[in-house]
Amino acid sequence: MLRPTAGGAWARSLRSHKGERYAEGKLAWMLDKARAYVGTSGTIVCRADAMVAIARLRAAVEAVVWPGPGGGIDLKNLTARLQLAEQAGGLEHQVSVRQLAELMGCARSTVEASNARLRASGWLLLVAAGTGEHSSTWSLRMPSTVAEDQESCACPGHRPATGERGAEGVPDAHTGREVSTRALGAVMGTDACHHYAHGTSGARILAALDPLDGADVAHLAAATGLHRTTVRRRVDKLVEDGLAEEADGLVYLPRHLAGGEGLRPDPDQLEHVAVTRGTAGLGERRRKRHGDQRRQYRQWLTERTQHAVERRGPARPRLRLVPEGVVDESTGELRDTAWRGWIIDDPYRPTWPDDGSPEAVCG
Image 1 (cartoon, rainbow, N blue to C red):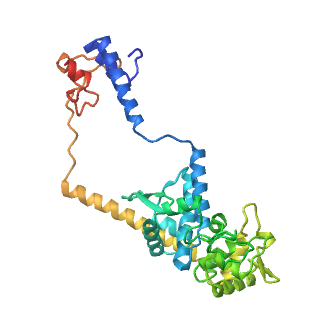
Image 2: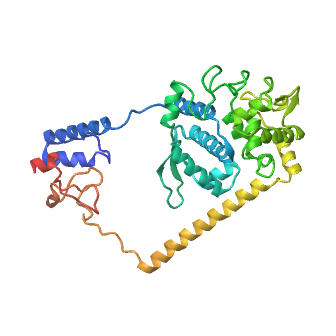
Image 3: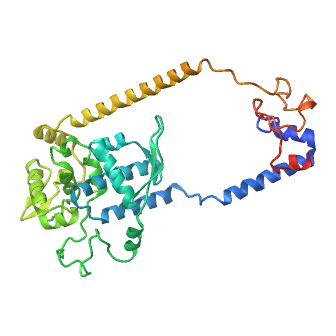
C-alpha cells in the first residue's frame, strides 16, 4: 500500500475506497488464510532429505532378489527410475515409456509390462498420466512388506543372513553379495548388453562382480536369482569378451573395469563386444525409431488442433468488461466511482465480493 508497485495496486485501490483500517484488516485476513493453508500441507524438506530417501529405496531394491526374466526387467526399470529420481531431487519424477526403453535398452512393450508389475507390487505409483507432449509423472514407493522386513528379518525374495531360518541352502561365504544398481545402470542400455548379446542376465552378473572378492557360480546365482546353468553360460560369454575373469572357480571383475563404485565400463570395449556379437547400432536404431514416432505424434497434434480451429471458425476476441481508463495504470487509483467495490484485477472478469471476505461483510 505504501509503494507505487503494480502488485500493490489493488491494495491501494482498496485503501482509497474503504479506508486505511479496512485495508489493513483485509491484508491480515489474507495472511491468516494463507497460514491456515500452509498448515494443512506436508512438511517442506530439503534436497538432502530427498537424497536420503532415494538411498534408502536403492538399498531396498538391491536387497531384493529379482528372479526370472521379468524380475531382471523390473530391476532395470527401478534402476533407471532411481537415476531419474536423483536428477529430479526426489522420488517423484517424470518419464515417458520410450525414454525408459532407451535407458533400459529394451522394447517399449517390455517397459509397459514392467510398469504394470511394479505398480501391482507397490514399488511404483502413477501420480498423473501424460497428456500431449508432457510425460507421465511417477513416484517411487517402498512396499509395506519390504519396509517392515527391513527393520525385522528377511522377507520372501530377500537373502537371509547366515544362521537365520531359510539360509540353509545359501553358502556361508559371500552371502552379502548384491547386484549394484549403479553398476547395472552403467551397462544395461549399451548394445553389448542387448537381448541378442549378453542380455539382461549378463548385465546383472557383471553388476554383481568385484575385482578383489571373487564369487563362484552358486553365489552369483543366489545374488541374481538366475539358474546356475544360465549363470554358467553367461559367465563363459563374459570371460570370452574380456568383461570378466575366472580363476580357481571364482569370477572376478577385470581391474581395468573397476571404478570407485564397483564398475567403470570401457566404452571402446563395449563397442567392440557389440560389433563381435552383431548388436552394434541397435540402440541407435531404437532411439531413431522413437524420435520418428515423437515427430509423427507432434505432427498429429498440430493437425488435430488446426482441424479443430477450422471447424470452430475464427476465434472471437476476448470481451473486456472493464473499460480502459477506469483505473490509473501508474498509481492504481480508481477514476470511475461507478466501479467502487468491484474487484477489477482482471478487466475481463470483474467480480463482486460475496465469499465472506471483509469486502462482502462491510459492503
